[in-house]
Length: 109
Image 1 (spheres, rainbow, N blue to C red):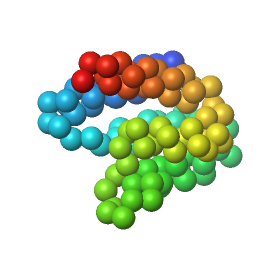
Image 2: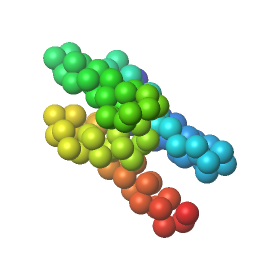
Image 3: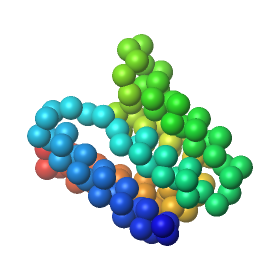
């Protein structure tokens, strides 16, 4: 699967998740799905530990006392604060698209 196809699938998964959130009033991240796809498609295998570190942080709730997953906004903020996670071009495109979707949903909510 090409990178652009993966990005489109990730965005579709995110959008489907966003509408689920609106309907059920629950905020969970599908960033784990995106990271798992990135690990499978990453041509530079030396970057895989970075993705796994990010996945671990999201699963831990990024410093939360309760052990629930991080929200998508928290994951996005964490990624932005750690530039090593944004160095891949496909990840940058995906994050930019998701930021736009989050922005659009905040105006419509």
